[in-house]
Image 1 (cartoon, helix red, strand yellow):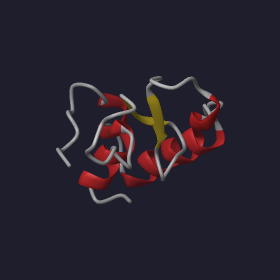
Image 2 (cartoon, helix red, strand yellow; image 1 turned 180 degrees about the vertical axis):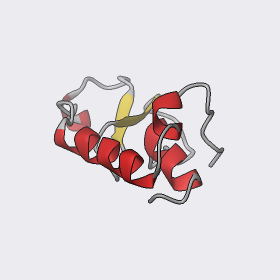
Image 3 (cartoon, one colour; image 1 turned 135 degrees about the vertical axis):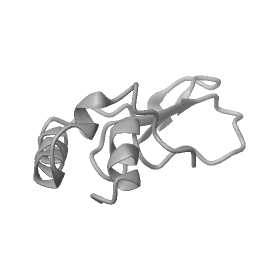
Length: 84
């Protein structure tokens, strides 16, 4: 999995480890409504959610063969920084 781009998520890169983890807890508390892939029409894109915070991590075509990202960009940056 590629490293997170610091230009995309500067709020994760600012502050100390405690501040970053607090921001993660806020993301976990504010999960978006998740789309049920089984309720979509055939050929619709598939939605995959972060295993850490529950936010959207990937939206792929139904016929996509490679595995989706398991972490959203913000959580990937936290992982790259050694926070999670």
